[in-house]
Length: 191
Figure 1 (cartoon, rainbow, N blue to C red):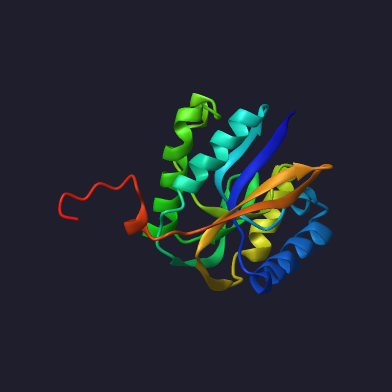
Figure 2: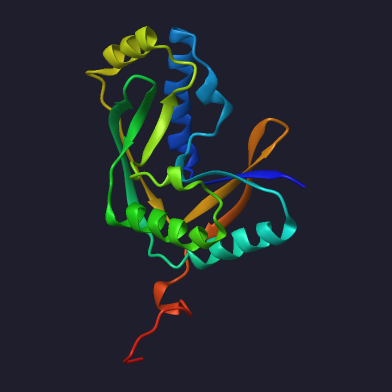
């Protein structure tokens, strides 16, 4: 048994359609297609390979314990890049997304699913082009979108896990947020 999972936020369908219009434009105009192999998403935890049922159960139990979170509004605003290989939509940092990513990372840390070298500063973003983007093409994409505006917002009330099946990322499990005050691990001296 070997499964590959991705923990992420998926915007609502209407916003994904707008994002896919941009991704398709970039792919057709600049001949880069790698980002179209993935759903439009905001990564919360790098993809992980799980090789046993026991570890898979521990993985999903840990994620369930990370779902004690209040809903929050997420804003996608304009464009950004990691020079010179990744072009993306900016995901505005806010307490909600930073807290959610931190809770997921903390809940999964004891499972040692990622290498220590994967301990990076979290920069939320929604990738539009990467991997097959060569530096000269990257510069053209950045120049093309330099003055373009994009802004959408949506309510986040949970997160998703996608599973890699037949060379495609497929929706696998949803975790809806649970009230933080119902978290059995929260100790309140005055409750």
